[in-house]
Image 1 (cartoon, rainbow, N blue to C red):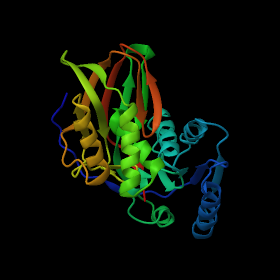
Image 2: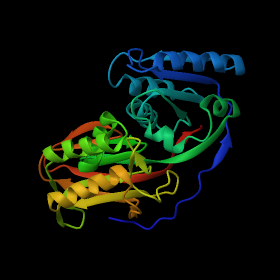
Image 3: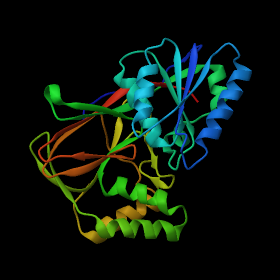
Image 4: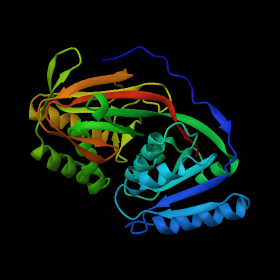
Length: 306
């Protein structure tokens, strides 16, 4: 399951953009429309020769299409004004378009902004003006095999079972020890383990199986103390099926003080036994029974800034 690979530091290059495409949900319950407009105004003032286009989405999944359509234009920057889910669509759309050299960035505007919070280094508008592009890793998910296989990319995590579900509930519950406890206990009450067969033929029962490219989820759940988004590896946070009290203890520890260092890998493969939901940067994907699943690291695949 674990392959030996040495990660390399993120390389940085200066990249003058020919256009900036800002993708946002005009019906967002947050401030996405206002933030998108503010970013355009700021960039038009500071980069008067660079066209800035606002691209509002019309339905779920539309950001993926908009990003894929914009990606083939040379020297394009695509900004997702959104949470992690909206940014996932943009990143995946760009990756599905092929090796176009397109740069992606996210301006936090949704409920969950783990990727921006854990990887952001400076205000986004300043980073765009500077044009210093760096390369982060992505997680590449392959569901099935052969010509019918589905490939998707994730910027932060891919997970099954308890840990990603707790993360979503924490986001709903909000920060604070009492709210954290209520969220964890609510999830724990309805949770059931799942079974997979690993690549070596071993059958395993898990309460949680998470592949992470960032160290935190849902603002408050700390998954690892060592995870870096540009080290050529991802963290494997695996919780084998155990007693419910032990599961609850792990969930509470993730929500409060963190899980500590975790093993890493470059690829991980398994086959599902029963229909099982999988979460991809917060988006839920249904997996059918007897489905091969492969998670791999895509080193330096995401060109980004900020």
